[in-house]
Amino acid sequence: MSRDFAVWAPDARVVELVLGGGAVPMDADERGWWRTTVDDAPAGTRYAFTVDGGPPRPDPRSTWQPDGVEGTSAVVDHDAFPWSDLGWRGVPLRGAVLYELHIGTFSPEGTFDGAIERLDHVVALGVDAVEVMPVAEFPGTRGWGYDGVDLFAPHHAYGGPDGCKRFVDACHARNLGVVLDVVYNHVGPSGNYLAEFGPYFSDRHRTNWGQAVNFDGPGSDEVRRLVVDNARMWLEQYHMDGLRLDAVHAIVDQSARHILRELSDEIDACATRVGRPLFLVAESDRNDPRVVRSPDAGGLGMDAAWADEWHHALHATLTGERDGYYEEFGSLPCLAKALRQAWVFDGQWSAHRRRHHGAPPTGLRGHQFVVCTQNHDQVGNRALGERSSVLLSDGRLRVAAALLCSSPFVPMLFAGEEWGASTPFEYFTDHHDPGLGEAVSKGRRQEFAAFGWDPASVPDPQDPATFARSKLDWDEPARAGHAALLDWYRRLIALRREVPALADPRLSTIDVRMDEQASTLVVRREGGVSVAVNLGDDGAVVLFCDLFAADDGCEGATRAQAVLLAASDPAVELRGDGVTVPPDAAVVLRRR
Image (cartoon, rainbow, N blue to C red):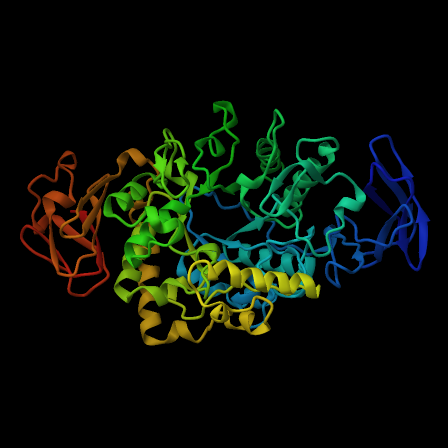
């Protein structure tokens, strides 16, 4: 079977294909692409490239690295996989509930096939799609995936290309969508040979990870094309339903057409070709509405943005933490603002940043924000990787779940959150370069020493035990306390389907009332639906006149007109003029 091989190396004098123990000359075109055709190269054939007589290197667009980032590439025949999801019609982001997971810690096996064995739990929970942390080939066998090197190759330790396809196929068979986390703002250091092939990195821009990816300098057309083709591959060849773009604020692009805008246009066209909805979610810390505004309105066209400030406002209020970026959060007015519009900073002064930050989300809808009470960053970037289950009482865990699942935004759960997993999610790596591994371990200790932590207590990312501790314990969901919390999450997610007002994305329909003295808060939605929480030390009575808006015809509502939809505490009680809410409890009500 003949096969074409191609690689972009615009400044090279000689490029050869290394295959079968020999070297095959390649010919260059005017754009710097080198090509050759080989008569016999079936799927699985190992190959590499040499540039100007240098050592063999993996293909920059390798779709399979059986031996990791330092090994040779292998040919993949995407058309050979026996997909069973041809009737899959996709899942829209609007109205969805997401579930973030890490393939390596989601099952004891730490593989795509191991994750498949746990999908029925996810289905029973009621979510619409799983959001998978990066799977592109990264150094070693364990890691978060954000230091990926071979962006087109699913990680070999997870099960490679076929394992990834089996996982997506299994999700679709269970009516679950799949969102993949991808990283285009930097490339990992270990096994990164891109600079030997061409100008993949900029000498004009820098990021926290070093040289920025070259999106706007000489040679950037092909770099941009690599990113666009990568996004298309995940959506077309792996049947993903959406992509989450990591830290887009670290993408430096001063060209007239930003790479995010180009991605948006390409994915719109891709959705038309595959005949199902596809979406892009961007992580950005700038609170810039242009990220999610349509290109026609001068925006970049992302379908939604991660809204970390929603998390910060809730976390700081419930835990009392005020360190680092939590210093500006924690008050009830701050939480109320987040519940209304996701972003807290919309143009005002930020003491933490020492500048004005953000812009108003005017005209945006709730489904253009993804919010969470926990995610990989907010858990894993703590020194000990503690989940909220370690930091909060059971009552406050339930309050957090109620506010999340009743929000007008796109709720996202972090795997294990739904049963109050006791296992941590720590930062773990597997760098085989001793110098790099030591640098990562030392840097982690120094980072948290600055916050007052004993460096000796900070887990070593390179220690295999750090990874092992982070695996979920699947015996926990059946245990008494964990099972009760799981039932609460299932009820709330089901309620979101049963009562459309809870998922209504119109931010103009949200009214938040609070009593700072009593530490109570009421979120009122259209149609006489309300969520009330009590964060005080004593029980509180929330009056019906505060629960139901007068313009809903609820002025003077009585107990007979109120329906209790869900209560996190059995001591919640409807009375003549309102509802009694115990400390650290939440209640969802609707006008009859």
